[in-house]
Image 1 (cartoon, rainbow, N blue to C red):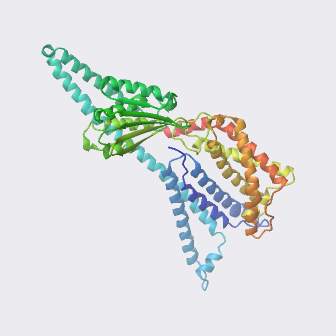
Image 2 (tube, rainbow, N blue to C red):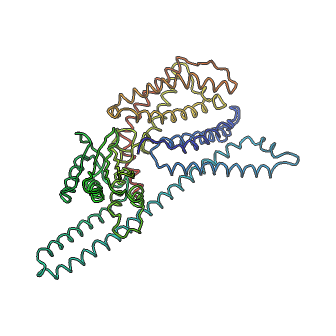
Length: 522
């Protein structure tokens, strides 16, 4: 959990952007069909791929998905390059070298863009298949645990009940106590099995804000009743933070505290501490025992089941891991010479960049969730239109932006301008996510962040970066290139981006989240 960027997405973004730098935008005096099909379409695909790579970098998605997509993007580009080179060398006229044949083909980059886009789509499909296989593996693991639990707990319990039932007249209250205990154990086992079979993991379990301290105190009382001689200390201040979980959170703390008490020597206290940040609540259980075995560390941190310890061994820890994962949390272990610390980290928020719209529970990240990411793209495109209209009203033109990509043309300028708007929109979403929580549900805060970000872009990107870029292309440009026209356009773009994003988060993202959950569920 925490703030993360998926750096593999920069590979996809870099491939798309570099290929567009070699895309030949046909001259305006060419036929319109040739201009759009051979020039503009590849430019849109390349810049779209680059923007998609940036989205993967900042989005709150699985890192393995981004890594797999980046690998396939590179493979697709390399494969298409090899195919085109072999084709051109084989078709070279007599006496013409292979290099000359390559240089005479001005549309090589267009084919490479096609290969990179195809490779990216293949990577997304491969990542989806891998995720499905992982899900099936987890389901198989749960079924194995359920089978072990039923065979061990239920069958052994029934055997004991039958045996003591036959001795009821001679054993009296002892037989009744054993029968009652075994019956309670079977009932608890049935509840645990039912929960395992009805819930699958993160995003598929109904969770909501619950008081962490309330569950800790109830769990500690329960353990003290069973182990009256145990020394258990609870730290963490007087506040009562809430985290995303459900009524089974108490099982997590009860089992961890009981496990620590059992393995701690007499006279050594078990410490339970709670710390809360703006986005997470962390509960640590520390004991002074011999140290958690590596097998059980692996079970808590990854959910990997090992049969070497027997059918019941490790089931409680497995269920702890399963519950925490279903809440979108994580479990960390630290084993040292003085004992073991097991730390449960729960989210206080949803897996989104903002509280607007009521998001879906998940891990905390600076990046927006996929529904919010779609909203950011739409908001950035709409804000880009506002920028263009404002620029034209004060005597400017968006077409000049196309000069950065080799052709000062209205269509090329609008395409590249919208690409810039989307990429800078992703950065804006990250800035909103970094703002204090009390401001993340405020429309004025979005407008303020958007305006500030627009001023930074006007001064840095428009004033210096674009001017240097044009000079490198041989186009005269003053440094810095700060004008009132671009200032007005940027001041129109920033607040518009803030308003569109906030309204989209509030009204559109929840609907997109429901559609996503429906598709994932099926």
